[in-house]
Image (cartoon, rainbow, N blue to C red):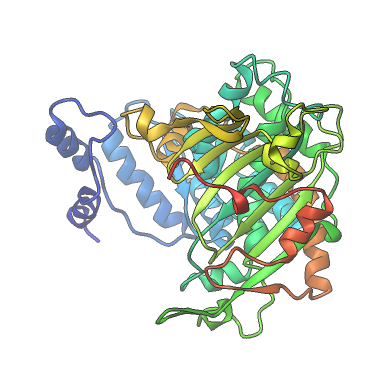
Length: 447
């Protein structure tokens, strides 16, 4: 396309929504004048040298930095990095590369990708992006933990009964099945997004907020975890379902998915951290497509009050009295804490209520998109929310054995209807660890 066509495409979604000061249209015009389109072959050093010449024309000898964003199929990562590094690196500033997941399929392919990238780049030039780490509520996790005295003493096995990381989408693969089928939900969501959030949630207080200090603590968490066992995993795949006059397709009805595919579109897992803070606490993950709702949240269920004076007021189901901290990542970002209190009146009737921080109600500001935050961080050289190579190795070490076992044994996923709450097996898995999924019985106060 021409420069004009690119600018037209960009201008359709360009806004001044974060910085709403005057001269918005003037700023947008200035920005669009700096957008250019250049076409070339991924594996051609000659084409990248032409790109380099074009960039030099615009840079006019000033100190210039170059950021390459590889939102491309993984099999061409290395070719692009080779050509960019050899023929289009900045002569007098920094050169950085943002790499989109998937970072391999298992420990072996991930290590190979890292090795190949490091032929042309040093670790400090590589920014492995996981957009979940840029979400406002994930950023707020460490603020919640380390700047509020009340949470510090509670954040351990002494008071926390279990922690749940829940991700659900209310749509299927719809035409993306070809890509998805070669990876599946465990690689697509659990091994990266959910595990990264778990590491941030469970880590010890870092020495500082410096990127290396934070990432050191995350790696310690991952290295303290037991590799996932097959008995602690449930997989599922959505099947066709008719609701009213609408029939929703099965995963294998997607033309881009091989017939008879065993790729899971749903998975639930129980993980454990072998350290003094978290020993014995189940960390449950659940991720799926074509479920009843679109949501991503962390649910922290606290232990029952020992010898509670009010048990009789709640009946036999003590789980109804459990304090629960819920951090809603999307949609409708918010944090709420379930507490027990007395219903006004002469009788002693207890009720569970929510202390509720609903972001949309509390803050008038629009929340930046996760990618906006992460791209800005990459430009500024802030690595705290990007994944280091040893972190990636530790994450794959947890999941690779069970992924290989699932594939070698050709484990059949449990079928669940499109638009349902997922496979029944997920409830049995939770029950085995004496846990109830919080999102099943939950009323969402933010809605």
